[in-house]
Image 1: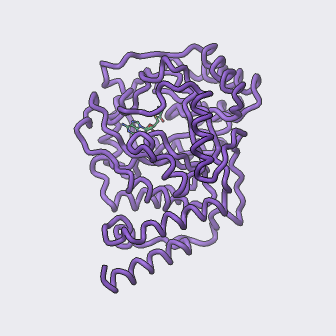
Image 2 (image 1 turned 45 degrees about the horizontal axis):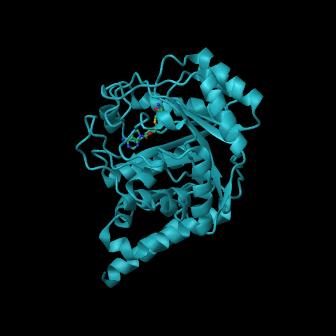
Length: 364
Ligand code: SAH
């Protein structure tokens, strides 16, 4: 690295530290080899920002994958209707409730219900499940059940669901269209705004390493997420699934994923960011690395072990055989090793205007 490159790297770090958006060429530099000596500095800044704004707790959310039936044929997703090889399962409402009860007894007070786009779970069925969970258990509840009309979202919120997770996946409408033959980017974007308007704590995010994702696209992803300003942001590497049309693609790498996550922490300092299972699936230390670069949430799978292998969004998914109790003990161990502590409470996101984004101050 020559003196000029060092000067550029220093000035980029300074900008990021002041929460000023880099320009596209500076953004590209962050992901280039010439910046590698400075990358650790960036990750340290993100870790420090995490500590300052959301503390040392690592919030656990118990993930219940309740159906892998899906009417969408998303090109990258292992449970898409495209995958004829997959064994399909659907939990009954009682099974879902029993799973909540089991994890609740272990100590979980925050749950995420996730599924494919399964028409069996229509509005009334979901409403009744939300109601039974929220009236039976003192807990926070997130939904991750795809796109719904604004009216349904409002009903889910009124029934007691607290949060809604829906990734934009990419800010590029053309790439989005190629990945999702059944959905339109504009609808996804609109739905995210409906989720916010319904009063949910909103989660969104993107996949790293999808075909066609240049640094310019990643840059626009960052800007999209800053503008949307969701309470939670999930960043995960795309992992090619052999039984999907994108099975032979390269997929996302850990370095790009962690660097992008760190930037998210730096520009959205009070957001809640999971160290995703996908990160742990492409690198043995992936979730630990994410927690040390800005993440503060883990979403261990508490679903019945017999269903887990069939909820195969991507291959080599970790923790398929460990029940929730074993998983929790394991997590407590390695989270403790990095000087952090597990928090099994509601994990509600407290937005403090002085610590979060100062809306009066535009980026860039
Ligand atoms: N039907 C719900 C839940 C989808 S699964 C919805 O559409 O929101 C949750 C997330 O898994 C998706 O948002 C996607 O980002 C991720 N995912 C799916 N396939 C994946 C793959 N092959 N590699 C990595 N992540 C994947």
